[in-house]
Length: 395
Image (tube, rainbow, N blue to C red):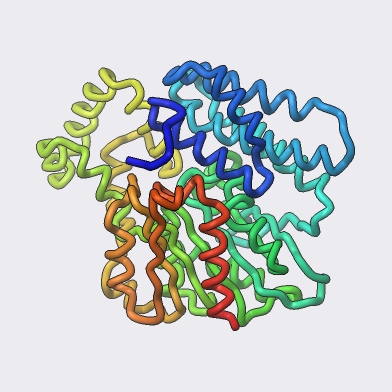
């Protein structure tokens, strides 16, 4: 599958470790910390994964040092704790996901408080409540700058936004911000908001808030979406035309396609027929024999606000980009196309071919060490290609 040697036979552990190693490029991990923690983990044992990454994070958070060192350690600890959340449901321990998520967010906020970067916490008005966000500024408060808006996927952390968007944009003198949309991070854990397919209703309030600021150049506003946001971002810019350029990493046309492909045909027929009770009973029997799959389903269903596999898959089917929606997109769009894309294979090219206007499809390969979903081991290369493309669009 990849040119890079595996660190775990457990696919989830191996993929998460690749993401952590990619964070080294942006200061969100340290190679020695990652490798020594990996060495202590029993392959496939969720409790071991949770305990060892927590221990590494705890050591960093309790070590004394200068303000700069405190910020750096808090950022790395937040990243390691974010990795813990991904295995929390596999332990079977109720409440562990939310508790670990809170610890990861506290560590991130400790980084925000200690860093010497100009960063502002935002509360973005949204349908009678607010969405939390963070804006990092490169220039003065009245100096309009190109601004990158980083849209996380289904389970990305704020540290992931730092690694794959914010840090690179700041290095080029841009502003950069990220937000927790419905079903993501604090909007999910603290506010109980859940995913929605019509993501333009999330992005438009964010654009409203940013364009009201004197430090944001309205002609150079970029929206970058990773993982499931490879669906949300094209959907949003089909209706929100103030975004100057967009990136889908990777392109996602049909969120539910791969999940449905793994279902036995008789279960798909029950789903199509609307047989909710029968479908959920049969799924319960299957999941009882496959605790790891059951944990994965718990993880995936949580942002949709359901514990019913029928309701989850029915909802996920609505996350589909049609020709008439994509045909409304007017801004330039970059679509990444990583070799060995494991979640939405083939959909990057499908989206690219649907796009009506200026567009580019960028390939990432195993030979470059840049294959796999969201190019986890190629943060530098990915950032160079994405930001170079955006700079060319903005002039």
